[in-house]
Image (cartoon, rainbow, N blue to C red; front, side, top):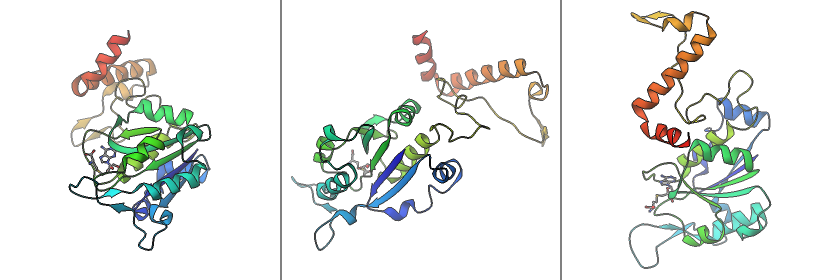
Length: 237
Ligand code: SAH
């Protein structure tokens, strides 16, 4: 998997992919992550990446020329129909479809090359969306000042789902959302801390009972905080 990030603030990503699972996935070459400065793709003297909106109004808009040049450089085309198979060009945007575990899984399974376009200011010239973008994705119903934090979220959630990224000691199968509900609670030593006990069953060594307890707790937690997930489960059954 190759991931390219297009941004006007490349320094933002200086160390963010250098920890834990993402770092290991890069070192073992499961994923290659490159961050590109959109200014590198400008051709004018002032290296302008933004300009004022046609029709007036507040703020600035990211210009299309540097984004088209960057995508052309990475995919050898400026039309989404001609991308090499497995190429996904993602525009981070509050107006996109919402990023969920299932979307992360789909990208981890199907994509070979993901290009993430980080917007800034009032957004990105719409012609980028019209011609280049295969997926407009939002990380949630709130507005960020830039697509960079959203790009980090996508890179992290997708990379950890790549085969072998988690290593043999962990698995994503029981993580929240993987099976439609939330994860169960977890405990580690000491068994008693400031008067708070770890649930007895977890110390029992009875794996069948532990499994049952975990499933029940996961369901309870989901019922408590995410009723909406259970509706999905019910309607599928
Ligand atoms: N005027 C735009 C918001 C611009 S925010 C609107 O109201 O739709 C500036 C940039 O931050 C966006 O171009 C996008 O790249 C990023 N961004 C903001 N909120 C986001 C979200 N919820 N998910 C993904 N990217 C987001």
